[in-house]
Image (cartoon, rainbow over all chains, first blue to last red):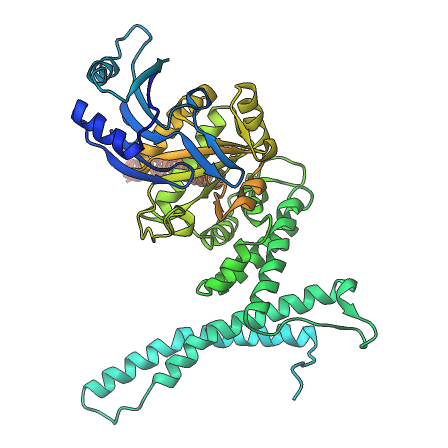
Amino acid sequence: MKVFEYFGSRGLEPGQVRDLVATATGLEFAVRHSSYIGEYFQAGQPGGDAVVRIRPNELEDEDGTFPQWAEFADYKTVVEARQTVESAGETADFLDDLRRKLAVTEDLEFLRRS
Amino acid sequence: MSDEVGVEPERLAKLATTLESLRDALAHNVPVIVSTLEEYWSSGTGTPVNLNSLQQAQARSVQDAADMRSRSNLAAAWMANPANIDVVAGGLAYIPWSGSALDQADAALQAQNLKAAVALAKSDPVAARAKLAAIAQDLSDHASDSAYLTAFWSQPGVNASAANLAAVLRTTSNGSTVKSASEDDYNNVMSVLASAAIPLGFSSRQAYMNFVSRLQGGLDEAGYSGTTPAFQGSSVTGIRFRTGESVGDNPGDYDIALGGSDLLDRAKELGIGLRSGGTRTGPLTEEQLNELGLSDLADELSSQAGREVHFMIYQDVDTATSRGPSIVVPDAGQVQKYYTEQQQAATTDEAQIARSQAAAEAEAQAEAEAEADAEAEAEAEAMMMAEDDG
């Protein structure tokens, strides 16, 4: 099963958040491009068990701008972390460690885990 | 000088056939002639002459034959449709003769034929196969004519028809599955599919077919079998949308539209926000994919492709393709499945035949041995009787 965790920054751009998260966690982020999403940053292999993505929450298309995560509409940048675990009882060690390291980071708020 | 010329459709067809024969003869003989003469001259014998004109004639014959076949196709199709005939001018139909106008018109005609072939398969599979073979031949003749192929694949509905091409193979007149192996069918379908562009970033056509086969299989397993995927974005255009820079062979992530009303309905049920008047979603987050039962598939495809895969849901694939450049994926899984089944059936038949032959041979051998034993026994008996008599 997959466990998701979200952090948000109200004022920082994705590139600035990438620098913050990389410094706090030691994770290495690669810049990625999608015509749907735009430029974003990712740590972890495509399709891997643990992935962290730093994405702009405001997207734009021919209809105008819209938030990728409507529930986090006040946040300019969202950090989406995901860990795949075997069962509901298993601890999401990677996400626990990530939250601990990011707790000291100003400008980045924990939003939710699901 | 007039820019019009009057021709009879039947004569055009004959001319096209003649040019195709010439093309084939040149393709077969020119390399042999050139190679033989060069070997002859390199040995110091004879005086070399310039063979460029012969090679140019061979190169040009491909396009000439293809163009004439296009004109013949158009002439026959347009004369068959009363709407195209100018009665005032004495029963003429006007067709474009060359250039992009000819490409566009013939490509549009073949796109219509493709759509008709898929529809016809349900009621008359034999006729559908004939239509498909003609389309495959035309596309094959234009294999090096990118303008023609682009015109063909950009016709409305052609991608959707191609996605359903396997139906032509699988359907019989009573609606059951085709049983007999047909390599021709397979080759014709693959000729059509292979003429389509493949998204950037795949190392080979086989890698692409493997990817789309898994994509379609995963959608089926998740309960969205009526969904047609289409690649969009830089893997199709070769250009990064927001910056305009060329992506080369590395298009970044794969952005894939999923066209299907069942899937869009499920997204609505889950409360996923819609765009463009409710005809599509935005790009799906991984959590939304998880709710839709598609996140494992996205992971698997991302891992297979070595790049992230993003999905956006549309009410149908035509809505997706009308929004921007797209490559609709062919129904590769069905084509491959069909062919594998046919190959297995053929292998099974061969094995059964081989077993039957072996059994018959063994039986014949046993009979021959029994006969030889009987003869030997009779001979021995006769000899003993002769000895007794003696």
